[in-house]
Length: 475
Image (cartoon, rainbow, N blue to C red):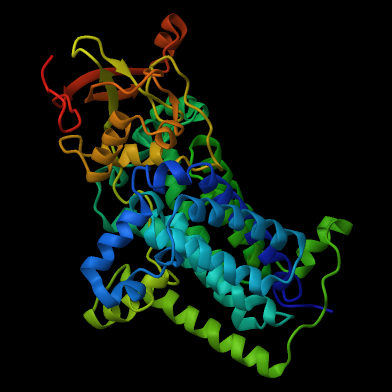
């Protein structure tokens, strides 16, 4: 019997794979939640929601839908992340998926709605959008054709958006095919493989840029084609995501994208795995349920179509329509690296007790000591290290959250210090902290061999030393 794409397996397999992504997301967040969001964290959720309530009044729940309105204590934040890990494990293990998917989505939305800068990345939105759709998927099996097509179109729209924004931005680095000459050393968190990729010959870098356009502008159309085309698209996009994962650190993004490739496959393709996959239950739901689920996915399809149109044409009525579901993050715009960063600036945070000797705080993942090799963090997402890259895109100013980080370091806040690799003041916080700005570039192969350098850097400027109110600013 010939089945349409993933008719039986998609409702059974996809939620479990998505549970694996939720597991990565919550486990990564669990390791950071007190330092980022606790009462002594960089951006305390409790203080943020209190300020939001004063500003929004009765509209606070609607514009920022989070369970943490009820309680945002450190214990609740930590317990919520632990609960996310536990629910993810149950989903992967095969427990009833619909309630687990609903709870996981609500928990992750609660963090994202109150997470401010640290939970504003595109793959956070992508997980929430895919997670909400998937709540309805297990209600009927085999999956209706419209359901399967909606997943394919979602993937098509997501990948195509990444290529379209590069063209529509007018960025010269993409236009002259030099974008990847810069990318590996200016991406947020480079890894060691990226250092080697950066030193490939310039013609190969230009060819790689053409390849990026091929993967993001041509290959997505295979997702909408017949079975052989979809299989080819699955293989090509799997290769593309593997290359991105190997040369950079993007949290769970690449793994989530690979999971979104699964609807491209037919049930017959899974037969190639032999007995690795057990036989799923053949039937779930009835004709009425199938009709209702198809209607829900038809709405998702319309939102996806609207987001795709909005890439190229932005009538006011369409923008008003797409803003309606935005607080729930179930329909989101996408498009990565529309403008290529060509210079890498870094803030180096230094402390002192006498304004003479300055000692640097070392981060776990972002560039610091030029002799420390770039590290592989993914699928873990070190959100403070990532956000330091965004802060340094315009190093002339100090963003408010970065000011909060400085205050926490001056206070010696242990949850924040736990996010760092090395605290140069183990016996107590320093009296002063300053931010020094450096321009970083990958070291040449010769410098790597001669001096053991992975990075070369030059100072650009520094801010005046900062201290807590009440402390003297002069030695």
